[in-house]
Length: 465
Image 1 (cartoon, rainbow, N blue to C red):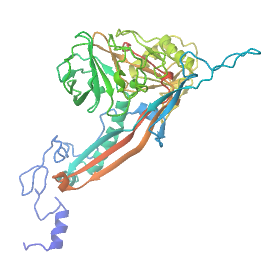
Image 2 (cartoon, helix red, strand yellow):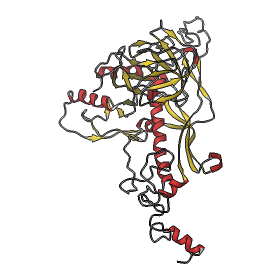
Image 3 (tube, rainbow, N blue to C red):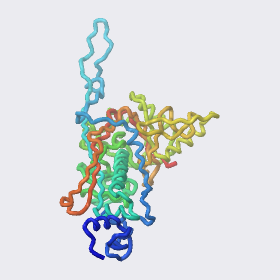
Image 4 (cartoon, rainbow, N blue to C red):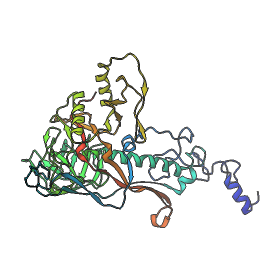
């Protein structure tokens, strides 16, 4: 056979296995031809793991990609601001009043101004990366490949990106480690609530209640083993306390719904447990958040780390406190376990024969189909109930993981402020990467903001259903 011309060479090489001049084994999945053989792999370099044993191109999701809380929060443009001010009192002097009854010849009330608090809020950035080698991009198009591997990973990265944001918004503010060393602490249940770059402070209950006054920065998190690595400090023991002092990512709803001195796993928190030194993202006055203050939660239903069965009285108490403080609950956020616990409570109170199914919209989400008779919940007292699998669970004083927490929120004062909407950046500079890879990046800049903490509440220390 004569050597093919350049045009014949290109035409034949594009046919791949179908009559190629290079023979049947060129770039085949298996075999010892003149080309390179490929096998099913699991490598992270993009050059393996591109084939599947069924030769199918469809990649099914086996992951929970729901982001219900993120979808339920109102989203706003960041605006030209790095913060705002909150009127927290009718007079600048505590207990004083600039309004009073005046007798016929009585003196005028003392002139005063409103109590104004300064709130600082800066955007945070969350990023998600992916990549593929140029070889995997090519071979993924062959028989048995997944097709456009970059498009596939881009789609998966988008799901992971929003899921990460939802997870950060539902992270716990503090956990009790089960063990620790000078540079690590262990909490299988709590490790996922910490992220690289977060700063934490520890309350060493086992060592004369020593409270660390300096930040320790997290450098690694292993959610499978529960080991969190941070800069050197006290050695943590079981039922000591590790609390977030600064978030690298988005502020969580647990950071917002907080009161100083709240028990975590049965441990009585330090007086300024998260707010000590004014370092926490939502320590807005740099002086602590004692109960009753303008920047404390309306109510936290806790039981000193002892799990108890959820009751309607707990939820009613949260609703009452929010309304007393001038708010109106717009959302009950909980885990699926507590959703069914509420369902069982209300089934016993059902007194109606007919059932009329309906759903309620919450942001871009909708509740499960419910009835106005209390069965298959959609609302409670007219407040939409939204279960989210990422809602954090309480950890009891015995170290056991209990039921998910319940948040009763006035979302009129909650918002996802977006400084930069999600951006996609692709890089094909092989010299910069020093490798033949295509890299992609998704990033979002923003922050969850709360303009009124006094109308938010939560229930913790509950048993699983």
